[in-house]
Length: 139
Image 1: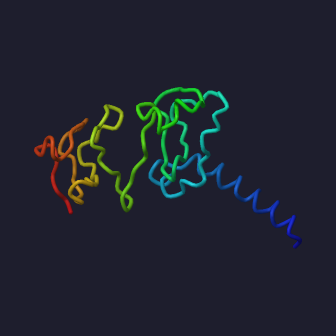
Image 2: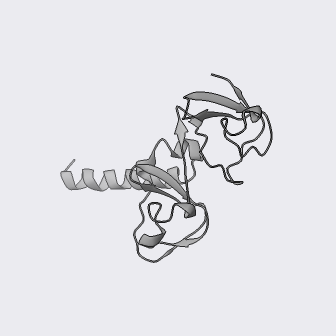
């Protein structure tokens, strides 16, 4: 196979992988961040839920926004939610929004002490440090 054919085939395979990754749940998507595009700064609409790779991290748009530099995760972090996992377990962010609230029984990783906790309440928007009664240490 000639080099041009190999390059063409590699591009086709990458395109197929990118298409398939768009359907991944966040946990799986966080394992293949390089398959997600970057902001182009072309002024186009990015709809809520759009995932992008920025500096090696995967982000999800929290609302509809325009693909402009001032709306990037670095410049407007409140417009994005970083998709974070530790060894397959979602990381508990230091600030938990209503959208990110944990369900009763969900096990999550708390980076500040390196332990995994299970939420003891529904709609849990507290960290293990802020409201220890809402969490049970699992590991």
